[in-house]
Image (cartoon, rainbow, N blue to C red; front, side, top):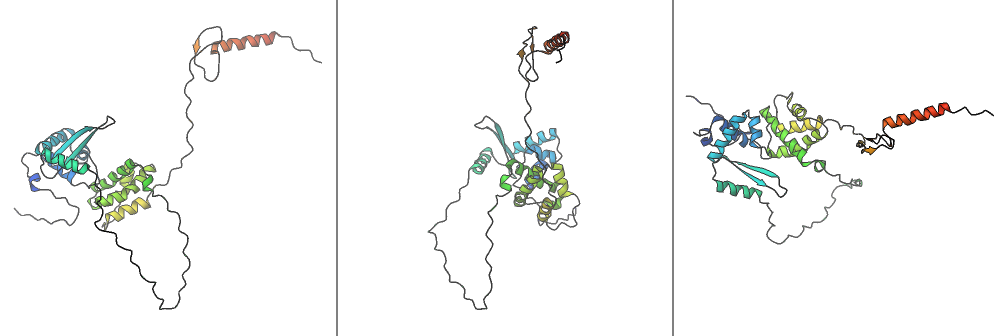
Length: 296
């Protein structure tokens, strides 16, 4: 048996041999686990979504997930928050963990980290002298007044939209492995992708704009994606003023005529249609029977 193996310089995941050769894990379970471990850290994707991207059917996914939980590679917990809403937390590991070890890792990840202050007293500010002018005097025009800093566009975007844009950017490597990005790259590009979605672009349109017609070769995936996100940004859609609220139906009202019926007026009618027609007919006959006025 001859084997030819080249160690990849980038875009690879470290998977222990015990996972690949595990005697009790099916091929679907190994594929699901390795696919999940290969995702960037910024991508918060549940196992069910990973199974869809990996082409694992529902029945095979349920069996694979059961195998991974039984072997200790997947742990999950369901919690009910103060508002009554249930959430599921999943932990995926490249080593088999016991329940106590997985719980400790979960609690450690949920604990907020506080930066410890530096030890010692603050140093004094270094002071130097103005450099001497050893050459001829140069003209230094006054600088322009600084413009007030504009708020960052990313801070005005909804966090859910930024997260969705990051998922789209992280998923383009599934179409072409030359577009593999690091977690930091995805975080930097997520606001630009969210701006696309905010301007009305669909996920399919955004993904096609980033993956269609790639150059050969791709020297820098992050530079190429940033360039396409900026250069092909769709225009801001023209929004009109707020639409006027649609009036609701009028409440039922008793007819003021002689029928004693209940009807729903369209505007400010006090009588139903039949009574209005009867009154208008009576007025028409009275007017017709009235003699014409004498002319002077």
